[in-house]
Image (cartoon, rainbow, N blue to C red; front, side, top):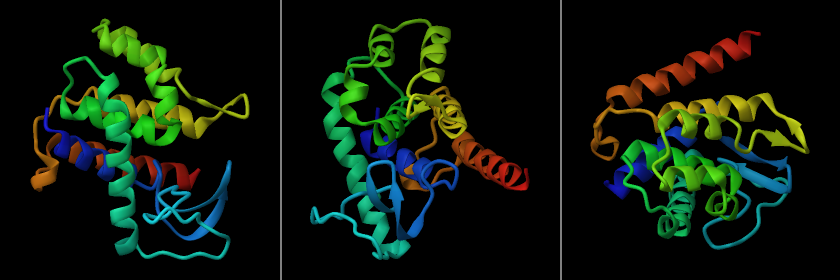
Length: 183
């Protein structure tokens, strides 16, 4: 596996409007002020405050660093032989749910135990889909999109500009976002 490529895939995936999306202004998230791609802190460790703004250009190193931090936090706990897409999907889950939750999850146990693919899919689709104890449609959709990324078999290197099946997945995300906006 190419960890740099997996991180690049994860960043591209997370930047999609229906995954994390981009907000140039601070907004109240579940547990504090967030900005850019759901970030609660800047690179220097300063907390995001009400009224803060950020450009996409300034947000890019932030999301890349957070994904790299998530990689460092979970990599020692991943013992299965994964593809770049498998690992990118796991990074997205970690970005959203937190490394502590992913480390001790049944999902990671199934992945590390090389459980059959239908068992991994079933577990993925029921992992971290609630907010405040209530099933959340956006989280259900996100888990499905993450699993779709996880099950991608294309071997294109996104970090060097390739697109392949991943590009089609991103196109599908865009179509999904437009469809959801129309509803």
